[in-house]
Image (tube, rainbow over all chains, first blue to last red; front, side):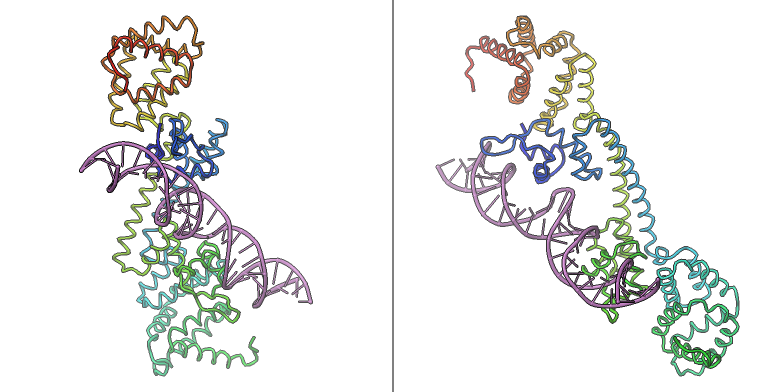
Length: 245
Length: 245
DNA sequence: GGTTGACCCTGACCTTGCGTCAGGGTTGGA
DNA sequence: TCCAACCCTGACGCAAGGTCAGGGTCAACC
């Protein structure tokens, strides 16, 4: 007859595991010898290895208990289930492997590929990494707050980069990030941006969102703060009848 | 800015999970608004998705914390590690799948294939399933108690089944399992077995183990109990000089 | 016959990664 | 004004064992 540690070794588990199975009623308690030690027969080894085979496959102990007392037909059905579940897990792990290798480049995980393309386009135009990160963050917030509007925004943004004047202004803004708010170079830039806004004023689509993104931007740079303030002031002067909500 | 539930939805986790990550210090606590609600920026979404990417791949949260603050070089090394670990898990799951499908036939999991062959050879000879199970149990106990001796035993057993007389006796014993201990057919069988033992007495290799297996057998059948007693008695009569240990 | 080291026993708390109340406050739309 | 749908903290629960603590046994060796 077997001691508990020999039984455990036979099945490749710890002694504690065997006792745990007794505790939860999965493996019946065997006879004890004169000094209270558990003594196991061969059937216990068979049972234990069957239990481990199922447990290793991820079947919860509670379900194993039921399975071992099931009819062959149900058992076979359950085994088919378990097998399918294993295959699903394998597929998932394979997917995790793919994603893990993408961890180095952060945004690929978070954003749809079209947006990643836009960010790379910006990098290609010479936009600073700091600005690209701000842009990335805006996209993330937009996606979280209004995923529905993403395709339109993607089209708009690409259209902007297809237009040389828009692109020029974009790059000029980018360069101004570290300027002093009183830098004289800001004045012509503000003029150009104001003109651009008048020209494109049709698409002031989501003022709430725009404010959100703006707050991000102004936090990052006093010069940009001044640009935004100046533009807001000029826009207000153009439409003095409006009341603010 | 994002509320906790929007952040959670963006990363595909529950609100509770986000709070848990705050609790363990994995994700920094963000600013609160006037009513004490947490308010998140885009960086939190990036961080959370990076965390989930690692966590989904099975990296413990404690290790993720260290990884996120690691240098790119160590990070890359760790990612390679994790990837290898994932591959290992995939292989293991594949193996579990194979084993699961073998659960129907019990002994294949527990015993080496040579022994399974022997058991099948017995079934082929017409040995009862009850006797096959006893034999199987003996093999399991032998393997647990003295795995070293298995190859020799396997050879011996196969040699036995290569000998027609041994095989005949084996089958005769098998048939006698349900007989009454006083059945007259037992007497010639005992004679034959005694003769066989004299002829093969060289290989009384492991008396301890033999006794163990015998106890299994005699528990199962009074007729076999009588056979064993009779054989022991005759063996003793042949060697009256021996003292019992 | 005493000591040593490897076993065995029970009982109880620790771990991971959250789920799930309980008991309350906030917000926004009808 | 009310309701649903949020948000907050705090605390206990779960699987599947790990890991002491505190003790008894067994076998071998000196």
